[in-house]
Image 1: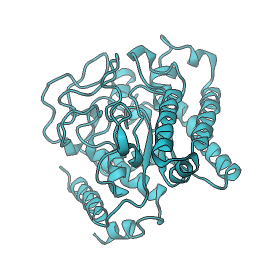
Image 2: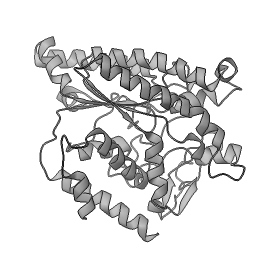
Image 3: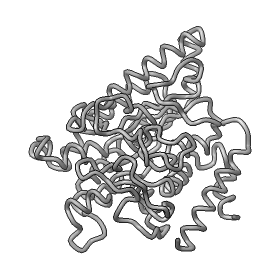
Image 4: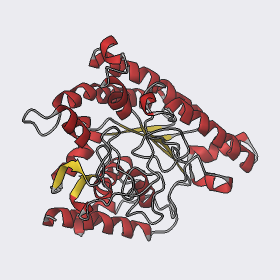
Length: 356
């Protein structure tokens, strides 16, 4: 492994460990909405090709395969650690009892902003359905705390992250054989269609009590091993048309975040630039950037069950043909954390890393 990757990796891990010793989490609960980048088991029992509850997934995770689309921790797992949670946020599929007071993960592999996104892979829990599941959680919290007022005050203190949109391109707009969206809309128009729906969904989340919400943009979709394998790069590092056409979503999302912060002064909405996070990963000089660590199924781009993955996993950006490795997630989480919590909870974070 290159020295730069080793040093950066150790700095991030050390900073997380030092943050963890500071005691109780600074916020009471963390609610997660998203797709396979955050799914930690919600797809396990669904009739879908988009599931990861088998080896070699979880090869570096303490509990083994759990449904996480990674060799180890996802970005939201690491964010939870950095916020001080002792345990990872449980998936809605299995969360029960008082543990929901610490938060729930609703993310589902293949899910999108649009209800039809990802349907070619089978069942998935789209954003609208994730919000319905959150309503169930909120009702349970009302019962636990004794009143809607107490529940509202509690939920106002929680942190919420929403990472949606990638699949609306990968498993919708960029699949004209199965979806008409690219024939009906220009990239600019499609981004507006997505944001119109997304804004209503975020409004619903706000109405359920969310007051600190991080909204993740779409990443560099043209840089995944799957994109490079399918389209080629024509001499570029990535598939440029995919990055360009999906970039309009981020422009619209930034504008939405600005509008929300203006319209709802009692809440904080944070735009997390997923392209910048990807650039941070690339700047870390990983040795392998264009193929995944595990051998993948041609149809799905997911790991072939029970095949032995690469041994030098910390040198790979990608775990399979779509999802980042734990080593890459560590860098993304550090970058996202510095945007979401620049000084409010752990003011020593960035300076501490610099000192190290």
